[in-house]
Length: 343
Ligand code: SF4
Ligand code: SF4
Image 1 (spheres, rainbow, N blue to C red):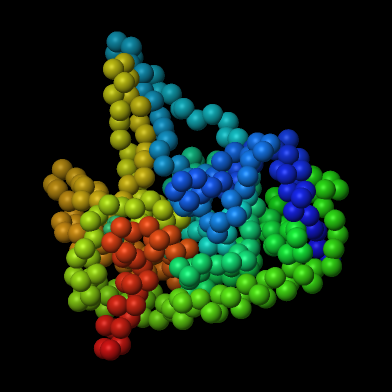
Image 2: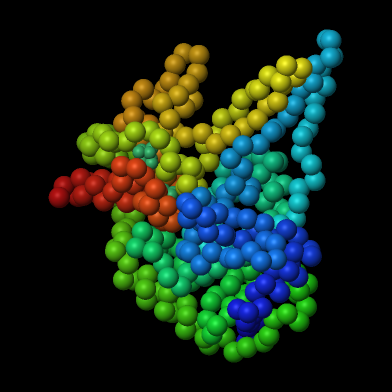
């Protein structure tokens, strides 16, 4: 048996959940879709996933870290953090759920990023299994099952409603707190829906893409691969791929002079930008080829080398859809794998 919520009760669910925490849902806009706080009347997007990933919830695009107020020779240090809100994010797909685990490895390992940690602890992830994966999806390449997001609570669409499964203690407590809003139903339709999703995934154009030839032990073979020159040639260094990517985590920290103090903030940065990590002595990566190589080597070699073989890509396909020159990680993998096998 499984818990079930009829589709026409979804608004009741959001309403009840909103009494306990802020609920964010994907909403269509002119650029695709983005998360918005649910209020009565909000229409939830039926699209596959949001244009930008959900990482902003834990790692916002910009945030103030600390402020310094000057008064004569006295300096007051102000922590701008307020009590983090409790919130839930609905409709997170399996690829994005996996990406949070990747970000955790970066931000929650020593030294722990307490800004990220606070938001992570206050957030509840409501996953949604993929009924209609896109042709750009290749989560399976990284061992992700689009039918089982493994979020705090998973929703599987079937039988004109959603079958619900809590995977964590936090998820169980949340589901239990909503009382009798759910029905108990036989789980068979949910299992059938998941099986259908897995069949669709097998037929996607990128279903045969593998990580063969990549991994933490491939530094020497891949770093000097001839293919980087061609692959990077047309890249304009716009950084779009890094900004839509759920696993990219580069940031910059800067000071803004307010006239009577300093606001220190951080904002997303991109290894694709020509001034990324520019220091007094200059920039360690002088050409776009080096910057381009860095992004993909990080996801396919450096990250797995330092994280028990886990890749830094979840196959969400966002970079396939958004690059202005149609370059992406799939093209990189295909070309380098071909080069490696001498074909
Ligand atoms: S590299 Fe591309 S496909 Fe991989 S997680 Fe980032 S945006 Fe998604
Ligand atoms: S989106 Fe495309 S052009 Fe822009 S930095 Fe990424 S690979 Fe280069």
